[in-house]
Image 1: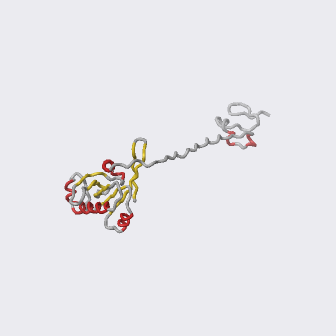
Image 2: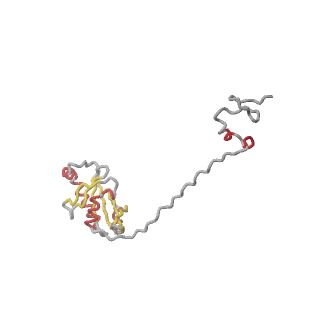
Image 3: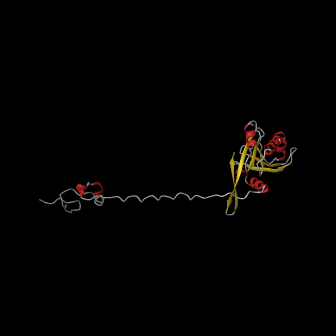
Length: 203
């Protein structure tokens, strides 16, 4: 009996109809080990690299900044106290003791008074409240003096008090003041290779 032939006339070895052209080379992928006598293994995925944890850095206390240098730092970067805050004016004379050191605007265009002290003292709170009162009373004049700025007078001014620390009497009095938005910020001086860094912390 004649051997069965393919479409091209070639004989098959086992009498089965040959696969269509192009499938012979991949047919073993679809056959079991028993029928094909071979197994295709896929390479294991390469192991993912495990990243080392970031190195820890030991920080040490830096030299205290002079008051003038700290004021210059806040004047150039008021957003260090609150994101989006921008400087507006500084060293503003008023009819209460001491000039208003810094005046800024927050993201709502609300006036923000920034007062700085380089030592903890109880009088710092009274000085800040006195400057707050002056700005609140003369807010329309402040807006007229800064016509290039958009100032929202519908909101009460805010008071930021910045110092290396605050006395127990200061903290006690602060807990009973609810009619004014007072933000107390402690600053920490950190030694860096190129100088001194400053970190601000909410009280």
